[in-house]
Length: 475
Image (cartoon, rainbow, N blue to C red; front, top):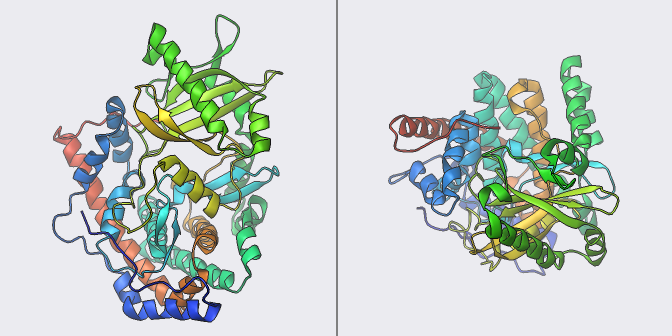
């Protein structure tokens, strides 16, 4: 494992002005050049499969093969699940020392649409399991590398990938420069509404691509608790809705436990909701109290998260209207072992705090709980709505032009999030006004995509040799 990173020199004092902060960033550029930032140097002792297997030790054993099956399905799927591997690799490379609140897993598929409390669709970062303070470029590198991996998967030529990568890095740099010219409140309120962001895409896409964009927006609006009720439940013998069984992806409590044990798990879920309630604002506690507990099931989510404990909980209002909540286990961030930073007694609170800091607006039911899970072991869970206008792009159907535009949108909201969570003046000072940073990120991304492809091949070989058990990929 690589050594933890720290800042190259002490950060500026809290009372420093814009010019001093910008100068600090420029000095960091002198210490860590763009050329150094572009390097991919795995070094000796690198063992990505051992890192992945180290995560398996704390996960639900029967779900670990599902994770490997999903990661084996494509190089991009492997990249999605290998956040720990990339954190270890990034810790081996030179760092700017300019820190902000990081997403920690800023790949293409962790951006998307969701409904705001004002019932508008927003486009933003939407996954914060790994959020932690660290060097700003680690998020940028993960984003541009994901574009390189996805571009290869889609069969894009090198010149097309290079254009995509340069456009993404340039958008981040230019947005950060713009944010550095704003006051604190405008920075805090910066966001991209879906209609605004999608309008940029529509303006340059052909009719077929525009139709796919419109379909993504329409589909997002339809994804809510009522839609989940129609898709994920059936009517029980008592006339009440029950979450359907779709093993291994969704397994109701009664199929995991029997008799008194199942009833105890339901009590645990009810108690979790009571404790979680205290982490919500007073008005949202009032709203939550309108709903009563009905049923719960274990759910498999994502790629890298498969095997961590995740529950979906169905609640119902007096009129029969549903509310689906998701309670997802929050282990320590994959970045925590590599960056000198704060310690968190509650990892779910870390996730929620990071999300509220980085997102322009967050789910009204976002909160956390720390307590015993179904096995009696104390664990940290963050809780949010299962579905509330959520939508994501279909990466594997993108053309080079669409991926370039989508990558720019992702870079823009990432820069806005970093500006809220860190020193935007120092970051802008490091980036400068030229395109050298863009070139460095593009170089890094292509080289890292090659390294990640080799890791994916190693996983396939380990599965073929029966050293790692993998279940067929599931959706």
